[in-house]
Amino acid sequence: MSKVNIYSLSGEVLRTEALPKAFSTQFRPDVIHRAVVAEEANKRQPYGPKPGAGARHSVSTWGKGRGVARVQRLAQGAKAAESPNNVGGRRAHPPRVERDWSKKVNRKEKALAKMSALAATADAEKVRARGHRFKEGLTLPVVIEDRLEGIESTTDVLAALRNVGVSDDIARAKDGIRIRAGRGKMRGRPYRMPRSLLLVVSVHDAAVVKGARNLPGVEVAYADRLNPGLLAPGGMPGRLTVFTESALRKIGEW
Image 1 (cartoon, rainbow, N blue to C red):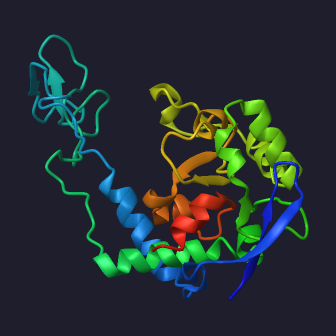
Image 2 (image 1 turned 180 degrees about the horizontal axis):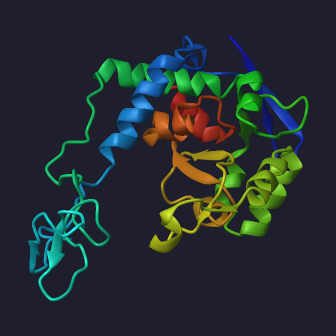
Image 3 (image 1 turned 180 degrees about the vertical axis):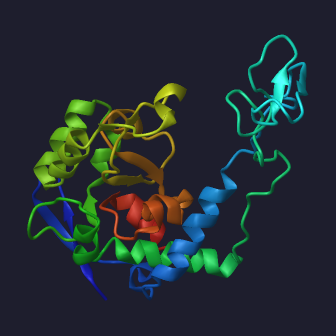
């Protein structure tokens, strides 16, 4: 069974403990990917155009014999309208609101995906393959004493993570913020930001939740609500994960 160091807020090694049995689960990237794809699909909201969109014109066709395309044209003018191949026209095959985007995953398969993604967080090679940066010689997953959960200031949280040796990954996420390349710029989401570390705490009212949520790319999760989407964003396992002592103890109760 693998062992992991317990770090203090100042970055010192307090002691060494054995990792829970969940971290020795067989690595199954195929199951992880399937579970994450299903999770993202089940979050999708049905969408479609408004009924009649692009077809609210008084149009008629001129017929043949005029040397122009036989498309529908505005009654008050000569501009083509309404047809899918014209500007401002309806869509040929629009998305339907009644479409079911959800995907089914077996209960045991989903549990295996979560355990396998959790085990990948303890593999330094897989964590580096995702692009994460951390201090050489750091034992993964990173485990910090419970005093971390009582820190409310973002500055203090960042200082603790810097002392342990994972702050470079937060800087990587901050430097990687980019303007989105699509229509989302018009829809209130102009920027994209890389995922940084995942901070797992034991209780829902931990003060560190407020302190860490403003750090670039950092997400805070609860030990009893972990899922493959948090542990392996995009279906790619090996996320840099920081546990508190109590959170790791809860994982051992699974």
